[in-house]
Length: 139
Image 1 (cartoon, rainbow, N blue to C red):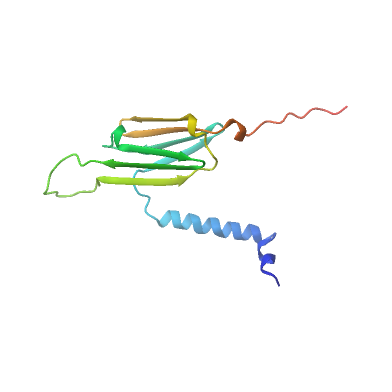
Image 2: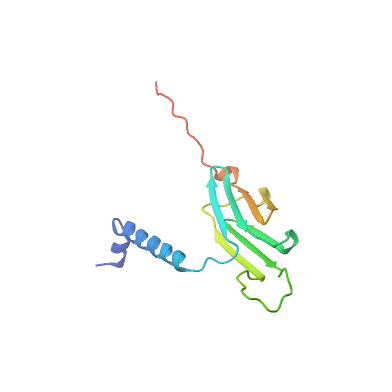
C-alpha cells in the first residue's frame, strides 16, 4: 500500500478536515495578543479594525505584502507611577502578523486611526476579483 493512497480522495478530504480542526484548536488555546483585531472580507477587499488605545499615528508601522499584514508599534505608558495597585494594560513594543484569504493591492491601502481604533481598508487587485460570467442561450 503506497503512502499517496492516503492523500487521495476520499482521504484527502478527511486530512484537510483534520488539519483545519488542529488549526482551530491551536488558535482557540493560543493567546491572541495585542492589539485585538477583527477582519472581514467583502467582494472588493478586506477591512481590518484593531484596538490601539494610547498609540499615536507616528508610533505605528503597517506593512502589507501579498496576503500578509503586519502591525508593529509601541504603546507608551501614560503615567510614571511606580506603585501600581493593579496593572493590566501593558506598554512597550507590540507586533502582530496575520494572513489574509487573498492578496491585496499594496498601492490601494487606506489606514485611519480614530479614537484608538485603527481601520485598514485593503483592496483586492482588479485581476483577482471574481468575474460574473453571463450565459447566453445557444441558437
